[in-house]
Image (cartoon, rainbow, N blue to C red; front, side):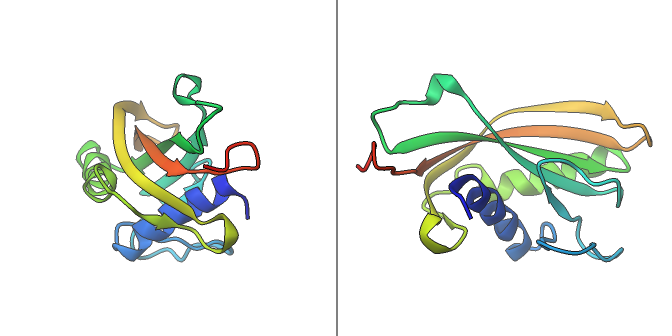
Length: 150
């Protein structure tokens, strides 16, 4: 598994370990329990869910350093506006200001130094009338390569 996938899976595992969401890498989620976490895009069901997606931020990239700041969008969805805010607040409580987390497994484990939320926005309702919100986090982490061994 590559670095970006390890980061996203590691974040999903952290949310599951804290009881905020369910992470299941394969198969369909059962209909009950905490909201499921999807990678990259929200599934159609259930009404309450989260999606994690990495994206670039060229202003924060330095080709000479092995530490990077990786932007991660956490999109939340729920049936009511207060429920989507409550879900996003639980994610913020877990990640904003978190330090020294080791995410994922194997040789590409992601060693973070700091996670912080940069922005948040209400997205309104989706086609089924469910409320959505996006929160953008910056993950400062080690990402050494042959060109940036640090």
